[in-house]
Image 1 (cartoon, rainbow, N blue to C red):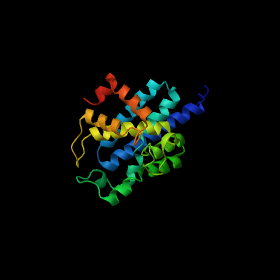
Image 2: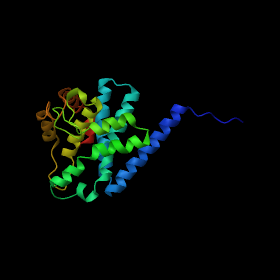
Image 3: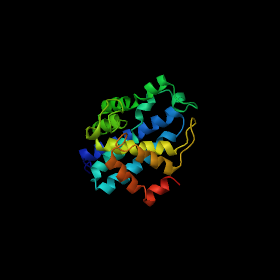
Image 4: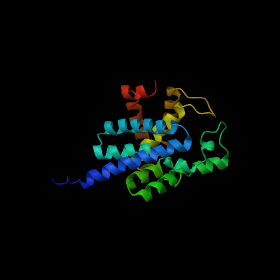
Amino acid sequence: MGTKRVNKKDYIDHMRTRVLLALLRIIEIHEHSINTVQHSDRVGTVTNLMGKDMGLPERELAVLWRAALLHDLGKIGVVSDVIKGKKKLKSVDRMIINQHPQWGFDIVKILGFFNYEGMIIQQHHENFDGSGYPHGLSGKDIHLFARMIHVADVYDALTAFRTYRPQWFPNRAADYIIKNSEIQFDPEVVSLFLKIRESERFKNLYI
């Protein structure tokens, strides 16, 4: 009886998924909670809805999903007490946290499974007007998927419970996104976000 031949592409996809799950588990253990994993899952769902509305092919949707799930991977380099602290961050703590996109990129670069995703992770805190980090990119120099994750990430963070500030209502968070269009966020992505925000799938995430 012959041995079934494994397709190289299928094997790589299988290994990529296993590595992805392992990284998510590391994030969860690091923070001693599942809050970050749940946050990343919601960001992944929101960006996936945007990607589907754009008509992205399945392979690109998969890249977008993985990048969204791993966008905060670099936070494993930050002391968990800082992330879960009950007070507003000190400037030195903020400087450390601002390095997490670069750290996430550095980690996935070593793995070799997420090169495309790594670039997106590195750019997900770049602002449309060039005021973001780590490299001060602006406009369309920021990868589209990073611009999409940025909007979903901020919206989800604002509507989530934080020990150092009250939880925002969804409409207030949406108003913040609109107000910062062309400053922090790509206006085209903001329009797309507001469109999918009316979908039942999106609403079910935030009820």
